[in-house]
Image (cartoon, rainbow, N blue to C red; front, side):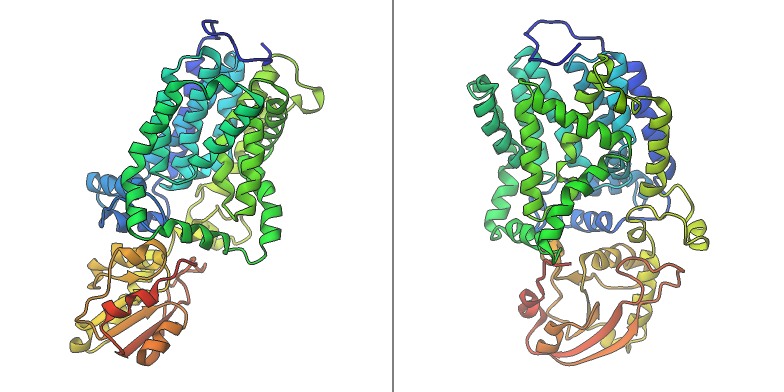
Length: 503
């Protein structure tokens, strides 16, 4: 069946190929579960755990959903990396299923549904995201669910789906503040290119009201705290000094994250078909414009990943209908899918033990794995310096770190090593804790700090972090440790000077 226009309400679609689609989702879940506990916590996961111990309606760098979810998982299974990541595994497996369902709504039969679901399963973004509890995992999943609801509405014109779209949007707003960009762009193009009747549906706006109500607490928190999320967005944009080069690279990095071979080819062809299909053209242009907007704003490549499933589904339906050209039809074969998976696995997941990677530095390193290792050893190294202080000084010493990951690691591993609660002025951690007024000494972990130099009488380097690991873990190995004494004012009064959103 070709996609030439929105299907009229009441027209039957192909049966849901639940056997093949669920098999694909189960295979992805099985792989993720096998490697779930390998290595250790990712830096952001440690931060979510720390933020979860200071639950609030919002944080300087994000809404409340991830810290709350991390806190709940840690209550269920304290200290378990494997358990903490179960929601990410479930979200990824569900994204595979919903990608197949999108293909079904577009008229695809069993083969199209399996091809689309399989593309999600071998995508580097979705597969790699399933290994971490992160906003980059849950946000693309929620976009996938939203696109399924919209494509189903295009076929059925059942307006209750628009109410559910509002619920999904509200959930997404509590994960990350990206989904409004989708709605603004999509509705503008719907008003221009159609379907114009989407904007005339009362339940669309009722759904918008539901989403806004669900976001009221976190928006209220942002307003009460000076809208730090706006500063956070600017800080992310400033992470790349060469903004032009970063903007030009954005679409290529995003395409690469869709998946080597299968994901990339099907995204490109799916986007082409979206732009040539009247009923779906507004979504094709939405993807293009969002890519430009996020690239110019200095956003992360995964910001557009939630629209990949729609492209995969459109391309899969085209293949099943026999309308794909021979020069790229070869991608829809099981050997190509297998090759794509074999490429994606070692680049995104810790399929090999860390000892094997350490002994063979030429092997490909999974993405971000250096941020999963070395945190207990990092805490050991800081604790050793802390213990070396005279007991009377140790009791008056606050621990402050340059980066929020470092503070998060010490928050998690420090209590068992006799360390006090850490603080950091970096990103959202700045609002979590404040050094106590009783402290007159700071043990600072990080680069030489101009804040310390400006507000303390003496700043001396007393050590360097040494994890003892062959490969240098990110933000751990070789980090200087300083002792700052003689503050010019009580530490709570000096604390605003430590605020820093940059990495």
